[in-house]
Image 1 (cartoon, rainbow, N blue to C red):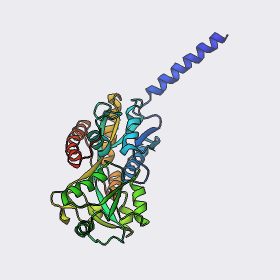
Image 2 (image 1 turned 45 degrees about the vertical axis):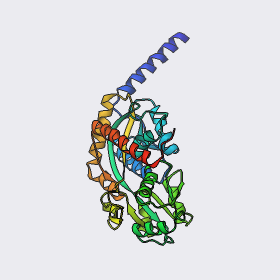
Image 3 (image 1 turned 135 degrees about the vertical axis):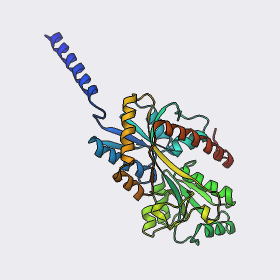
Image 4 (image 1 turned 180 degrees about the vertical axis):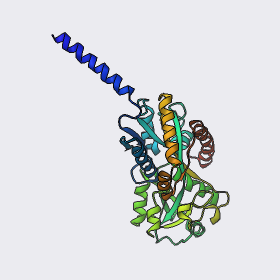
Amino acid sequence: MRLHVCAIALALTFVSSGTAHSQPYPYRPVRVFVGFPPGGGVDITARLVAAALNELWGTTVLVDNRPGATGGIGTEIAAKATADGYTLLLCNISSHAINPARYKKLPYDHIKDFAPISLIGSTPNVLVAHPSVPANSLSEFIAYARANPGKLNYGSSGFGASPHLSIELLKMMTGINIVSVQYKGAALALADVLGGQMHTMVGNLPGPLPAIKAGKVRALGVTSAKRNARALDVPTFAESGVPGYDVTSWHGICAPAGVPKPILARLNADLVKLLNGPALRQRLEDQGVDPTSSTPAEFAAHIKSETVRWAKVVRAAGLAAE
């Protein structure tokens, strides 16, 4: 009798398993890892994409923040996850271009351990200042910093991240001396600028944008070559006396290597559909993100070219680690 019951239970298990795996993807919740804390530009972008996928699929899409190591902790977790399409990563310029350029050894290989699915979009970084800083523009800020070396400080989302390198590049191009203070996330740095504990901070535009619009901080410049549509009154660094300056952060969706091709194809098709549709595009644009979809091959090529580019910047800035 016991053997008979066990046999029935085992058969039901196989039937249940086969039924589950025969269901179209996704039939259970999907988790998107983000290597930065809530409230910053990377997190905001991830949550907008997750919400859009949730609406499209009717399946829960969870954002799981795992901050630390300039996005490296969340990236490592995603790299080692089961390759079934139910774990994704908001991969970005830090995790898939700058970190590989900075470190000789990482707990993940940003090329071999991931399957790029699609770019999501790009956004400039923005330098904002507390109203007490005696500068109404980037050119005035540079002049004041030159006259007062080491007196001003700036916060960013982590050593070696895109916002940090934005200012290190500015320092290289202008010769100014301002003190770097690294935080675990851009939202924490912004909070200290709002409270007057920090002079300035730099972060992806979506994070500081509400404070800029509310007049709580002064936007001194955006790092991209062109002005952003949601902050047209904020000039670029290049316009403000730093010709040739151009830094743009980008975000995309990656999966652990080995995810079945039909699932990758479904993910790419759905992301492209959403990014080319009016709802998600508008939500991203409202946050200062320029939506950009791609094929997996295009995204993979972009990651490789960005790795080469940032390796040169990291070396020039002396930020390469062992």
